[in-house]
Length: 459
Ligand SMILES: *Cc1c(COP(=O)(O)O)cnc(C)c1O
Image 1 (cartoon, protein in one colour):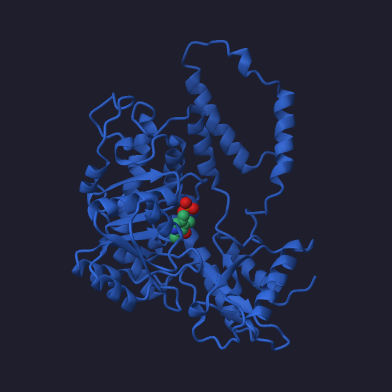
Image 2 (image 1 turned 135 degrees about the horizontal axis):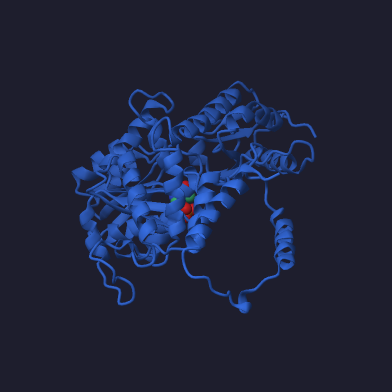
């Protein structure tokens, strides 16, 4: 029985076969020939090898930021991939370059940038997207550095090192947000050109107070970059009359409109296969930093080639096709893609409230998005952090390896500063806690059972 995924992919690629049939027939080279039995045998072997993965598709997998793309994205990707356009230059992928321009405008509108007077493009990842944003930060303020919080993704310090930019790291408060007093002190020195704020930290989903950060930074002529690689699409739930997010979280998302640049990963919450990040700049004039000429590729038109505003050269046009098709099915509206995120958010709120009622469990932060972090207290009453960490590790391993009903979570090392008012007996450098990313809408129904399995574990 073909499943909806295979049917969509087969139907999609058949459309490209029809297109290919419009050209004169030719004999394929024998050097490329592969007998059907070999194909099946190799794919059967691969199928075995791929069983090493955890079941990322299943609601019982509630660990890292992982899930399969939507079938419409897979079908659109397969369809365009059969052509294999390159979005570097219009010669290599005119159709998918136009699709990319459309989806980037949609992303710009979502976050409140002017879609026709801003600049942006897809990237192969959030890492590359952030690298471009930091590079523009450096070109904008060549003598200055960046400031980020210690809850920001580690990529910022690494990329700043690569760009030879100084980095000031300020602490996050116990809610995981950038400490604004520390930011003010950091800005007073005058060496900061760009503040890197995070809308949805990778560890806990904390959202920095972007309105306050923009306020403090702009008073000093300092730029603001927002890393919303994970959280960006939650902007869809941040309308003033929507109560899916906390009001402070929603206000922070609305303030991204006043930032200078933002990174959003469609391959995280945009239902896409890996290979789809994005970077957007509010001021299209930063395009001047990218200026270069390509002796090989920019022939076909005076229209902008995406390679002219991107540090990467070859990029999958299929990624733009997949995102475009997905946004036709699930537009960037509260009732489009937003309806999916509403479920994932609701799953986190539900699990957090179950944990709050549990005498032997503690939340680390009140979740702002759909990531929850917590730890269990040993029944022995031993509150040494080493004992709690050992319980986390033991429960984590056993939950995953039990043959009946396995549950897959992730773990997180939490420093004492992020557990300010938890009365624990610290005898280790960090506390090992549970982290669960509830990024599938099916997690909502699964949460009561997940909670029970984790808290009242029996083999
Ligand atoms: C995932 C993530 C990144 C890195 O993006 P990749 O797409 O994995 O390269 C950067 N910042 C944040 C906040 C993230 O969650």
